[in-house]
Length: 551
Image 1 (spheres, helix red, strand yellow):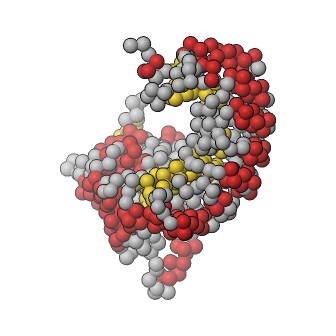
Image 2 (cartoon, rainbow, N blue to C red):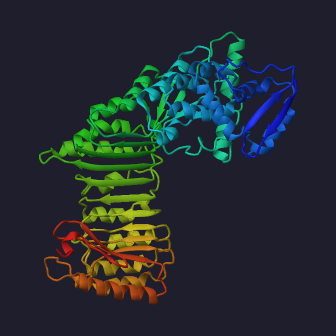
Image 3 (spheres, helix red, strand yellow):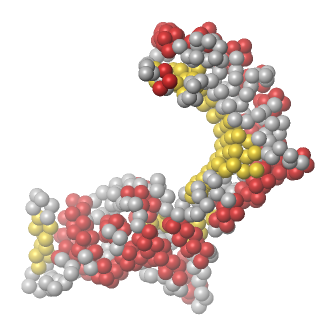
């Protein structure tokens, strides 16, 4: 059989056959394009076409047929879903991504189910596809059903390679558009998997007549638990995970927990590989005792890198012994988190006088420590300045922590200790007055890596702001400063802001910034409106709340 090429400038493709070849019949649902692709491995003299296709379509070492040909192939196959399913065994791997995209978007559930079972790559990044095509419940269920059928088979398909079903919407975003291998990350998904020791062991077991153990498939998902009742897609996923617990492993890097009953959370976490969680946010209004019921799960998250714990309250009549027990229970879990790098504690009512209990259990230095809207004592601040776990901080936040009545000498020591690494410092709404702030300025001037400094909501005068500018003029990396409206911009003691005075003071400060040679540093004035509580920003022009607008 002889194959000849013919193409024009409009990227249309056809194939002519000599009298010895047998093209598809007119009644067949496959057109000539599909027939060529399906028969490609069987053509004895295909070198000429092969060289031509590769010269047109070679990208980063991965070959793919012309895009228009793939589109026509997908359209033709999906016109007959049963035929598409039957063709999967011989379908070239280059056709799988575009065909799966068309099947998923077109809600061809039978094709989706079959293609999951025959998926020829190690990873199926379904989440990225769901981001572009809002999933129909039945189509999503079909994909999981295909995985379920695959796991149920004693002997898996010849072409089976699927090891990971990725449901994260921000992962592998280029796969479906650049699957031909333009980027290295895509190439890794398309290249044949090398033989692994486990696979070799299975071959040895098979030769010895032993029944090989089936490797589990991992499902990667980011979980956000918000309501009492779960959405249908997550419910169906958890159902499958429960049915195939030994063969389907749920791995979750990011977990967000909002207002959900703790018993529901515990039921879900039993199905998750807890050592896969790296980023955890708990935003629940929990009593300390309720937090205690969650803590055993926290202790099993051995690879956790970021933890945000918010709004844990202590009941007024809690016995001191009970309170102390719950706090010990919490801090003991930190001993099981050797990779923790970022710790954020927001609105934690039991923290005052106990900060040392929390921080002394940390096993590695933190990069980020944020304590916000909490009460702390002077002894807490003193311990913080000496704690070994905060010596390499990049981000330090004390927003909403009232420091008015405390000596800030420990904070000055802490800033000096971290001056070689500190990049972001947040002292918003701390009640810091002029004398306290002035004491911090020498330490601030040594923070060579500082890029962002926020201290809005503090009663600071214009003279101290000018002094701040003088002390930070040598910080070459400082690019953003958010500062409060100076005291001189208020009309009265009730906190009524005078926009005209603020504009004058702001213009003066900007002029000082320019003359200091730091014109690239951006300064914004921010204050809370005493009438509505909204923030007021002032950059080049004021951004005022409606309370200051003329009627």
